[in-house]
Image 1: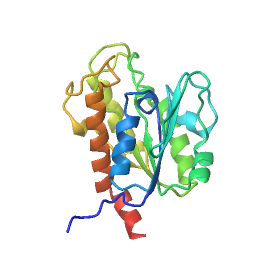
Image 2 (image 1 turned 180 degrees about the vertical axis):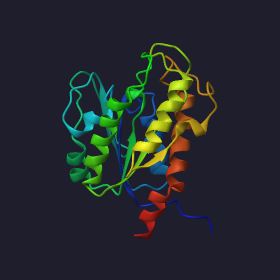
Image 3 (image 1 turned 45 degrees about the horizontal axis):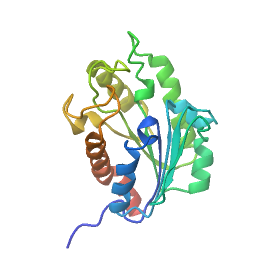
Length: 221
């Protein structure tokens, strides 16, 4: 008898940056794969360029998207904005919150990683999530291609993932660099993947979620 998916019957809220916002990016394959894995409800919201702290308030962004289950996504331009995470959780009542955030904090074009600012961004969001008592998994950034429009570099990606792994509690952490070798997923601009990379990333995220103790614990409740 096949083992039931750990996501079976769960309601998920997924929020994040540009990877979840534009067409032909991560949102589409991730939405499809989560539902295929048995999730009962998936609400994905992307906000271009929004660091974690933007999810504790309403912040205007240059583009975004909102997709519920298998319905067509609502893709937005400059009218897009974030919604406070507590408000989103109150409306959706998800079993699990998935946060896809990292590249907006990378400061890839800067000589030094701004740890103090990044810590403020991360902890402001995790504190708001903790107050809702919602199970949470944070998905960090994968490898890019060194250079490109955003100056993403392997060294900074390593530093950023190590930082996030140490600071996203009470959310569990998924280190996306474990899914591929540096440069394996080709990008269109150094940071955003081609569709083949996004498809691989989506499958790997779903597999990691199904193996996550946070998700497995939900099935025991």
